[in-house]
Length: 370
Image 1 (cartoon, rainbow, N blue to C red):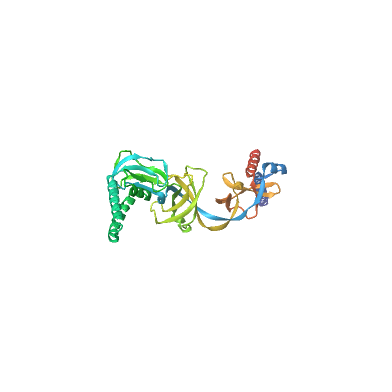
Image 2 (image 1 turned 90 degrees about the vertical axis):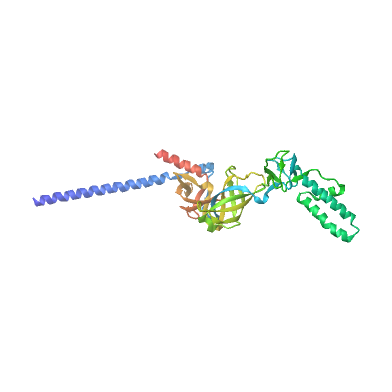
């Protein structure tokens, strides 16, 4: 009886061992088959004719020189060095208004004519001093005493913005100018004025604001964590929200000394050329600031990168006409190239052009198998 029990136990153990081995073998085989299928689905082999038709060209992943950049928000503002506030230098009534908001004006152009009693009085003083100087020209002592009075009256008219030509004309003819001309001190656009002919203005009253927009400033905000890598003089590449696809280049000339407690940023400024006037103060912008010296990074052409199954990928050439999907981690983009942080090695051959065609072929192959 004991012998029979021992035989039955041995037979049960043998049976379980056999079944376990069989299951394990089938599992391993299944996993191997799945691996083969997955590999097959991520590769595509093309004929030479298909390679030519699709325009597929290969290149090697290579190290290239680039400069690190930081991305910052900003806003276009006036260049205060090219901004002028024209005010009344004498009290009076506006007789003729010759320029209006939105108009472009040239340096020295007359904006309005003002009837000002003080202007007439100073001209009379100037003519009297001139006549006295001429009358006493033969007496050196008297002339020396008259000269300062003449220069004083002349300077008063210069302060009112009369030109040397106008002063000479008044002195030559002995006739007073009836109206005081008000001129623009620079070429630009009138951005603010609310005057009307007949208005009376006091000394110092605001008449016009004029801006030369051939250069503007970008007010950008640098995050605290990036301050160590930014220096004044760095190149800035700016894109304005209202001008998609355009890039504007300038230089960072000023970095603030105080960190904003709420945003943890520092205000900095860059100057940008704006000959065509497309950059307008008040525009929101985004800028890339070159933040460090040149460094060497592994990079591939931008066209070789494709999004595949929600990941960034390239197509590595494994044989003459065979390409396999390789997922990569990308970094900065620069000059038509993209930095490869992870997933690719130097000199590995990849599809530089035609990568979208390869992606399509692999996707079709995957759908066909499904």
